[in-house]
Image (tube, rainbow, N blue to C red):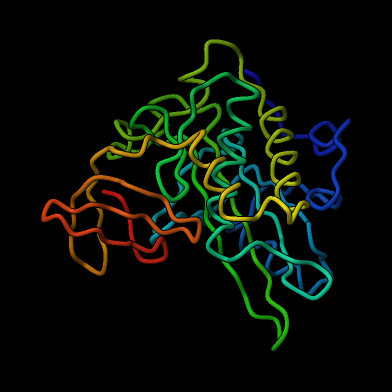
Length: 266
């Protein structure tokens, strides 16, 4: 294992970052990195600002879940994107897909672990969760909106670091990787991937995003159960819509679209 406190200079060294990470900060503890970057807008934080945290006291995931991580065991980061006339952002539904793609690619690049995305943006190894993405936003005024793009990657956890109810469903790079894991390498690769995507609006078309998602996603055709508006559905995945919708052929033969905002895979 490679332990120790993250170092921002080493994370960013040698990387030509155009939008994401030009201003990056490490905090030793915060409630959540998403909350931190959104609060920094009032203090003058600009588009592309990034915060890494060694510990979160109130980390959270999609659908109101809690994100568990011991101090210094994960890469936990949030990027601030400003949707303004000066700074474009991808269509809202794409932001989570793109972030999941970036996380999976960074993990593969630095560790060789076969990270796969379970729609919309959970990163798995086989059926165990390795990383998660959470997108939150805040209206600043009538013409401006700020997005917090949060990523958490389990790096140095051992099985007993996970709560009892998660041990069979969670994993880490240290568990899955055959070589020592360096959190700074993973963090730097994540920055580069996010910067490449968010700096190039030409990549935000539906076909490019769908193709990139397909390269690292669990395969189309698998059977899944989803929970939507309090009801369970089961069927075969037939398509992932770039607006962040999952398209299933249900067992009754009805092709149904499930939006990411209110759907979870169970």
